[in-house]
Length: 504
Image (cartoon, rainbow, N blue to C red; front, side, top):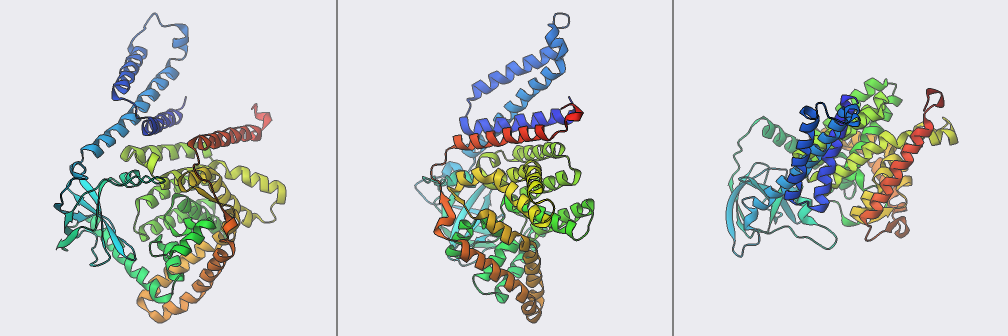
């Protein structure tokens, strides 16, 4: 058994442990009992049974040791979730949640303010705790501002169809405060290299978004801000509904599947320009990380960028199995840092599954299209296979979390995705040039406006009542059945595809 396969087993065991604890809540006494028995067993294999070991144990000593350590890593996954849950319960401010009286604290804004039409949401750090504070639209506060807040702390609400508590807990937020009294204490910021760089990125992003507002009117300005910067906060509800109905909502948000699809489409166009696969890989990786930094380096975008780059690596090397092990290792390291990503972060789930889909599903879709149409429409087929493979691997997660599925999504993505890289580049150029010269910005905005007009027309044509299907109460059992069938199907197809003369 190779060392990479052993590490793969350890990572899978760790992830399974996190998953089990997230859905079952295993008692600590039971966990410690398993840990003790497993440690005794491992020590027995290492130093015990010298002369009296059964022949079976002697023959499979290394494999049994690996399985023993797999149990150890599974227990570590369980304990990692329990430690995080203990931190939630004993966070200093969360103990004051739902207290009858108002409290006053001073904290620092630790992320880009989420500014909406009528309010703004701030992540405020107070000691070791994060509080999500909702305030009126004005006065505006900024990253690293020190503010004094007076109000009632609350536990995030759990709705019938949406667990808001878990949604914010993945970001380390255990308390919320709605429309308290707020006062700016200091706008003098204390920097280190990271906070200084991040503040300048956010400042540049705000300048570029204002440039888009000056060169485009609604809804084109909000759509372009969504496509270029992943900011759909100011988009009108009817436009958001059209994006959801047509299955194109991933274009205007920093979603996991969006980043992975964009990376793959960029790679495809670079190859079309004549670059070698190795050259295209490095250019695409640089492009996507510049893009993630440009949109404010959101955590969801960074995680999706890591997984998307690993999916690209698989295409570059042509070794899906090796790259899937790197993908699992990356996921394990992310979950070690924050185990709540697995059960509560939909973006993490989508980016992980979309990457696996492009690694394992796409080759079979390519093979199917080659049989049907040969190489006649190779460029179109590659875009279809990228989109379809990501959608096949993420479909049940989307239905489970959002309760609906777009019936026209394959068609709309085929019609829109080829022009998204061009729209993104042109939109970014308009925002940069428009910030310097309004005349040049207007000139560059004309071709961008035609692309946006085309996108809006696609939304209008396909956002019909029949275009999406609501699937309420989608059970996790169907989720498990779907992925089991997909796993078995891919295994059988891989076995069928292997050449018989090699002895398979």
